[in-house]
Image (cartoon, rainbow, N blue to C red; front, side, top):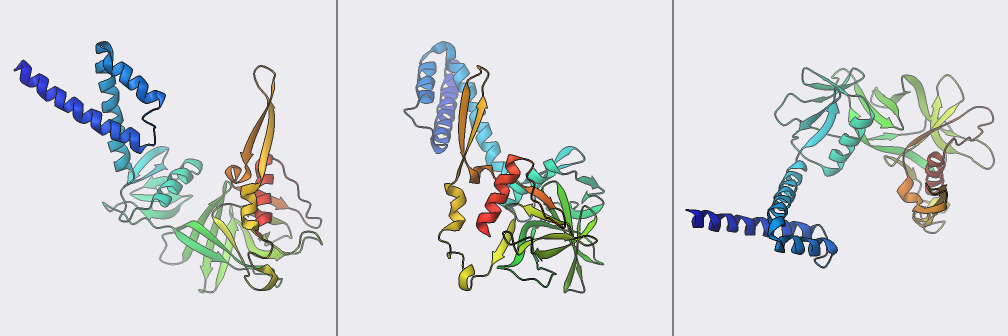
Length: 308
């Protein structure tokens, strides 16, 4: 019996070793790396063989768990994570839902997922239908520019049979879009009425697409990877007119200086494209003076300027 148990155990160990080995290789770890050398050294020592085996089991289980994780959405409701197995899975949607549910407060009641009393998902079915949408916003002003319209992705649709509404999250703000008569749109940013407008700021900054408050001349500019400003492809406004301007942001670097714990000056270099986030900038009438409070907002506006 002891010999049989030993043979069975050795075969299991070989299987686990092969599985974990393939897992490491698929993860891009070089077999000549110090990690593999350390595994060989530990595996040759009888005192550490059992420890190495436990590590391999753990890694194999992590690999199995990771393969399962891509089949469900993980969202935060009522301060707790909720696992949703959808009818149609999307990795992009999965990443966005996990990120946005961490940043904004969602709730769930009677199987309905809500944001600020707006129902967005029905979670009662065993495999609920989870869809994200795209919304096109056209300028309501009489001024025209090279930007024809704004297209926004990763948009939630509000569950309401009586009216068509869409919910957009950007830079710690909630933008609610309501379709009226199938032709017009009412927009509200944090329950404040706005409209998409093309504003002439001054001779240097002209005809910029943004959101204007309905009851004032102040305007709001949002920057986000989910916002796409569609530029006219005709004439001088062709995307390649100024060369490869859409790739300029990839070629610009930011060098940040700081003092470490040893009071030594250090420098950190990063691509601007890797530092892009979301931001909200308010410009006040009549001067429309651009005041940038932080580095992140400046980088976002630079990216927007290059793309426009």
